[in-house]
Image (cartoon, rainbow, N blue to C red; front, top):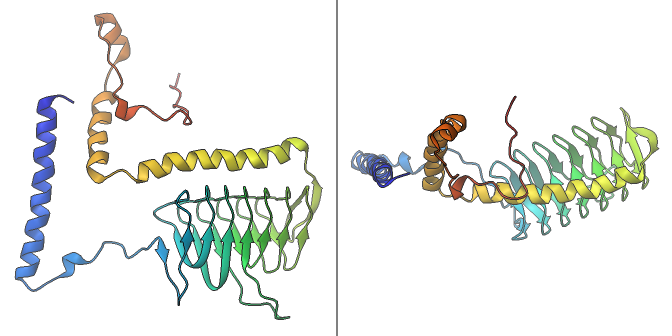
Amino acid sequence: MGTLGRAIYSVGFWIRETGQALDRLGCRLQGNYYFQEQLSRHRTLMNVYDKAPVVDKDVFVAPSASIIGDVQLGPGSSIWYGCVLRGDVNSISIGSGTNIQDNSLVHVAKSNLSGKVLPTIIGDNVTIGHSAILHGCTVDDEAFVGMGATLLDGVVVEKHAMVAAGAIVQQNTKIPAGEVWGGNPARFLRKLTDEEIAFISKSASNYYNLAQVHAAENAKPFDEIEFEKVLRKKYAKRDEEYDSMLGVVRETPPELILPDNVKAPQPQK
């Protein structure tokens, strides 16, 4: 973007800021303070009773996720868009390098019929697939819970075990290490291969890297996001074949260069 373009962008930005300031002033003069109300009352981190979430500084929590009450998140973990972790009547503990994918729900049980206390405990390098439900259960290190699976009170998923997508695991079921369970109700299907066990660790590592990209994007200020929109609009219309005929070389601005761990989209043939 040239000097003129930057100047126009800056003028537009200050006009919008001035308009918002005038709106606030007008509301005050009318005795109306509703302009202070946020558009959304959503809180990513929320206390319940005297319990507050404890989140490591290296955790990615998506802006639309909800971490409520007695929840502990270990380093390198990621809580994705639309997830709810509600530690109100008991605690939730999540280890390091674990990913809880979009729209999943993690809750707890105060106790079962026999009086056993049922927090939810999830270990290190665990993958919880999209829209899974975990309630008062334990998932050991490097286990895998597929998309849409449901784990009920007292379930234990041991290390290197896998719950298939859509499975419903009944109360107090133990899934042994190295096994795949699936169905409704979930039952033993087969043993995991060495390649599948290695995939579980790889999945956790991939999600850690992807979380860094999303964290960086979500940390951008509003004016930087708007500036990038202008750049993308400008460079999206370039015709590389026509430029090559004219001998024109257009360099991609550094703001649009993707991180090394993100694969660039392939052009359609």
